[in-house]
Length: 403
Image (cartoon, rainbow, N blue to C red; front, top):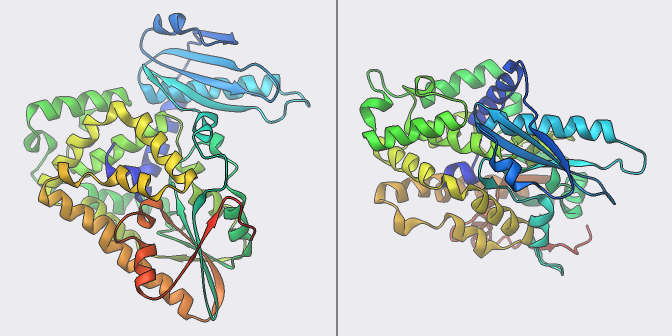
């Protein structure tokens, strides 16, 4: 999984991937339910399954977990989707008044183990620790600056109470880009316009054979084929692969923090730090040799997706700036072109975002909840650092702060 897919706004690809996932699930005429076991997960039985396979766990307070296993599917995305559907059906059938809070989540996809929400929470310091949440005040204006994760799974809720309290106190919600306000057809059209290779070019003519073969294999694992992406830019393919792998592991933009708060927006004004056009240009506008490098990195890191996702989420929940920054600090392994691209994706954007936030504070009134990808708030040149340089001192809130 590459840094782009890991930390930044890729709403167009996420929306396309989500739609494709639903189409795949809807197109299946039958599901082979290989087995449902109560208690411990049966690894031997799972290993004996053919085709793509996945396991979802149903957890209820005070009850032993139920493991729902689905096998013999045509790709990982379909297997994980069907395992979750079967788990949710089991939860509905078993629902009783004493256990209303049953939760389904994926724990295996293919040979990969997926960290559960409980396992991730267990890695967070038990005592007081910082959050990716700052409060800035100037005159009559207040800004709550929150770092987010764009794709999450339901088992990672509820969010820290301080995030919800900050939102409840705000009369403006600020996001990087409000993709929900863009008509779906326009979103898809603009995404395609930016993600396509120049006329006459194709991935087959751009990639060497080993990389082309690796791309083809990864696409197949996720229910796609080369014909679907034959004339797409390498960065668009890399982003699509990363997002769809996250979807296969149970992470979804519908559970992302932006979606969570946009669903509660009510009569609050929604503001944007950037435009949809700006983000598309950045995501898919790197030189082609850098895009090929991004695709190689994405493919090389696929086996580490769960570990990288887990480390990112634990760093976010723990307020671990250094840990989060280190996940994206791979400059020694990058070409100069890739370093320049990362600077445009993070450092340059941070300057524009910080200027917008400063403008909210200079307005003299209103309370703003500002949501940005957490990578924008960690490391050198972060938004927090830029605001400090502008003599705007924020209060870092903690897990015990009372708002």
